[in-house]
Length: 220
Ligand SMILES: Nc1ncnc2c1ncn2[C@@H]1O[C@H](COP(=O)(O)OP(=O)(O)OP(=O)(O)O)[C@@H](O)[C@H]1O
Ligand SMILES: [Mg+2]
Image (cartoon, rainbow, N blue to C red; front, side):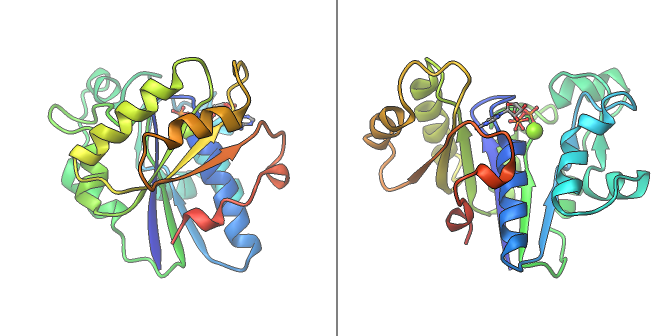
């Protein structure tokens, strides 16, 4: 049994895509996978079908029902803003200890994949960020970044900050941005000179999960 946290340098970079592809690829190899999106903002009846939660349920071949939604995404907020602020708008808070308990669940699955929310340092509560969540779980993290102009600085800075919080990043996935200024391999080579031994995978633009490169080597 392994657990992996999927975080990113920012929002809208490719965490759900990577989590969904990994779920489908592992399942295609006969593994059981529990994909979670414990905290989600911008979640309403109108956005439900296109939500990260629905995509991860589809990747697990589970129906999208109120029960399955609550099962993998207990903390849902309507406003499409950072979780701490979205919670305040609803007069709620995220109980950090309950979040850890939930993410640490004892399920009998080969792989647990936890998609974070926003970037690695987005606030969840008044005094916890996503990085604190990962650190508390003590599980390896995959860092998803883009290939847009500016990604090198964002990625190197995020990796250093995660290392400072004692988060073990075991892989970086460059998910190709629509407006990449250089070929993916050049971004990979440049990044590679600053990330020590962390493995870097490139995920070119895809229109279906079957087109994705094999990412399963990135989870234990
Ligand atoms: N390599 C890629 N090929 C094709 N589309 C991509 C790729 N990477 C990201 N995208 C697209 O970019 C959009 C944002 O990606 P995704 O939803 O996975 O980001 P995210 O990090 O999960 O965002 P959020 O912070 O909202 O959870 C999606 O429409 C996704 O399909
Ligand atoms: Mg997502």
